[in-house]
Image 1 (tube, one colour):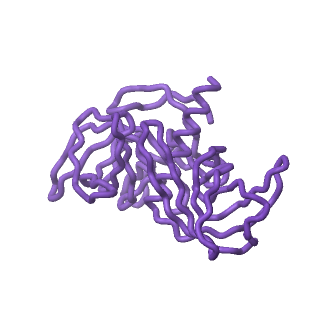
Image 2: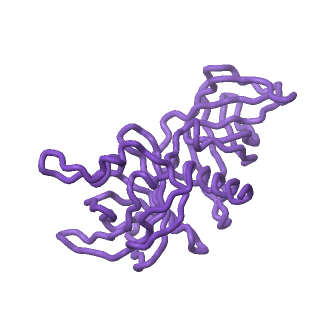
Amino acid sequence: MTLARGKGFCGHHIESHAMRHPAAKKRNRMTSGWQVFSLLLTIGTIVVIDKEHTKDSEQYKSKVVDIGEDFVLIDYPTHIESGRTTFIIDGTTLLVTFIDQNKISYAFKTEVCGRLNKGIPMLKLSYPGDDQLYKIQRREFVRVETPIDVAVLTEDGFHQFVAEDLSAGGIALNIPRDVPFSEGDTVKLTIVLPFINKEIKYVHSNAKLVRVWDKKGRTIASLQFEDIEDVDRQYIIRFCFERQLQTRNRES
């Protein structure tokens, strides 16, 4: 992760931590008569939007309709839980996450720059460019140590555990030695995600037990998510991203 200076919100410049992506160098090339502005964020991509700087942060989903050199057009966002269309005023700062065609997750901060109506109502968001995205890989970037509560449903009933660490691909749990877990078992998880703004989200997923091991006298069970909903994975990505920023701020 390097400190880079690039285009900021709605044409302004900001200082930001950025992960350089080699494909971004091709962002303005001409290909078969079409100008390619992004090789990662593409038309039709589903994005999850977090109004992160409001007291009552809420999440919305939308779809990319068009992409320009320094902006993205999306259809009007809908609330993930209620399904209601929301109105976001110009100048609102947002955190956007998405998953590309290679199943790699990315995040970027943006600002609402305006709105258009070309048959469908659209919001215009600033786009910093592929080279300014935070790349979130399942096992490398997102994994964070975090003692959150997790409920596990097995054939014997519910068990309550505390997580050792969490990533977009799985979770490690602190478990007693007498818990009847065996490698290869499939269980149901309910993960409690407490965000900085005091909001709490509950993520549900099936998970496969891939490893039971010892760590400094404690028994750890590593589980891999299976059949997790994209929205729930995005919640985990956002939570881990938030914890990464907290850690970085404490160390700086």
